[in-house]
Length: 166
Image 1 (tube, rainbow, N blue to C red):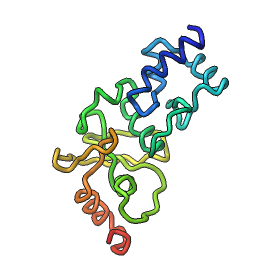
Image 2 (image 1 turned 135 degrees about the horizontal axis):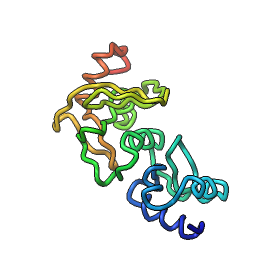
Image 3 (image 1 turned 90 degrees about the vertical axis):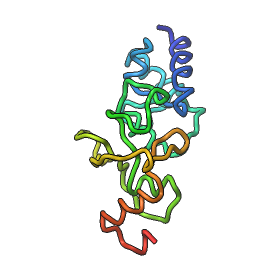
């Protein structure tokens, strides 16, 4: 595939995902890894996280969080996922507090609550297992996030300093 065609395919796919897509999504759309590397080298794509690419013109908020969430199900586009997918996850704990704009808790990575046992090789992503209900999840700018109430309960359960939680 020529670079011009590849950038069109990548841009079309990424348009509905904050300007981002995974390697698996690009491959499924007919753009191989070598072409992705060429697009990055040409400055037509950026790679904000391992196996995630972004169109440079896109300026979404919470890039690290979006990339981690996309990598949970790298083959499925964001628009095909529900907030409580059995293979997905919900941004939670300190990450949810950051997205909600609650306080100034230090965050070192992304915390995601998943419905079943899962692992990740990414040291910046911490997966937590819990069964969430629809009333405990909200969607903020396309990302599933625990509600403010659930986020506060999670932080208190983690014994976060009460002053920070307050």
